[in-house]
Amino acid sequence: MLRAGEQVLSYAHGQVDTPTGVLGRVAYGGEVIDGCADLHVPMAVLPSGGAITTAWLSAGPFTEGTYQCCRYRSNTHLLFGAVRLAESTYARAGDVSPLEQASRAGYERIFSVLADLGFPELVRCWNYIPQINQTHAGMERYRAFNIGRQEAFIASGRSCDENLPAASALGAADGDLLLYFLAARTRAVSIENPRQLSAFRYPGQYGPRSPSFARASLLSLPGCEALFVSGTASIVGHESVHLGDVVAQTNETMVNIDTLVAEANRMSPTRQFSTAGLEFKVFIRHPADYPAVADTMARHLGCVPNAFYVQADVCRRELLVEIEAVGIRGAT
Ligand code: 3EB
Image 1: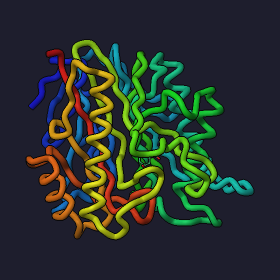
Image 2: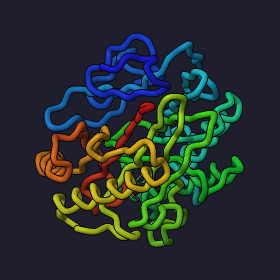
Image 3: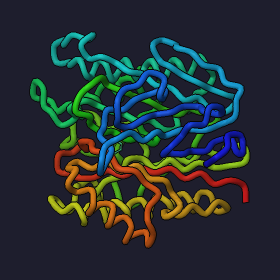
Image 4: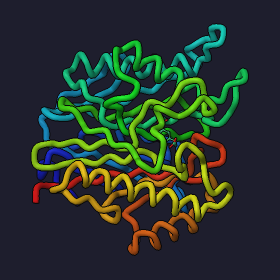
């Protein structure tokens, strides 16, 4: 188990009972128990249920509070925050859906919190969108989310194609729109995947507004460097590949992650990240695919992955798996 304070940021998943040095905790699955974690995500843990807690560990002293409905905890270097929005509090306004409004409002709040608390750099975002693949009033919900998110970037004076955060976007069966994030005082390096078209340049067939995220981000902190690999799927160029084949989709996804790791090492030659050394969170559309996904990852890596698995919908209907990862390398 990692001890807080050894380096500016560490990450752990599993049994995280650390009482001190917790910047933020997120529990996946299980029951909603007040105080069990800072945040609860309603996604079933595979293969057998229960809950997994993830923790971002850092040294105090911390400042914490609620600011414009955004809960946050921060120290000298980093801020962890979360916004939960009920779509029912927004009314459809012409073409503008409640989800688009909630997504825009959520990101605008995040940006104002970052500006006011002095953490201008959004490094990593997690976006959980209920019923992500459902269509309402002719628009798929993931696409409505993308419009609202990009509107917030524009309204906050942020670029939509530079310095974007790493991100994941997944669908939960139900609940509120949930956004959580890590922000820093210093800028991260955004990394793109040469095998894929940047998501912020996706053509119009994937929705009227492109998704605002980078394929990975690399943050230098005192004593360590953190690589945040965005949710990664079986996409080459801008197209989904290996339709209906979960093993091939998993392999293609791992090749995409290998490519991002190589890009990160090109930008940070001293740190030498390796795919096998990353910690993975794996989102699987159909629970029955769990053994095939876990086995394919192990074969690809040549070892048992440091990973946990949850059931979630992926933002394109044909994608069966999305894999994200984090790697933190201390000074060597
Ligand atoms: C993709 O590559 C798959 O909209 O924030 C992955 C990670 C995906 C983040 C997002 C979407 C997002 O397009 C989907």
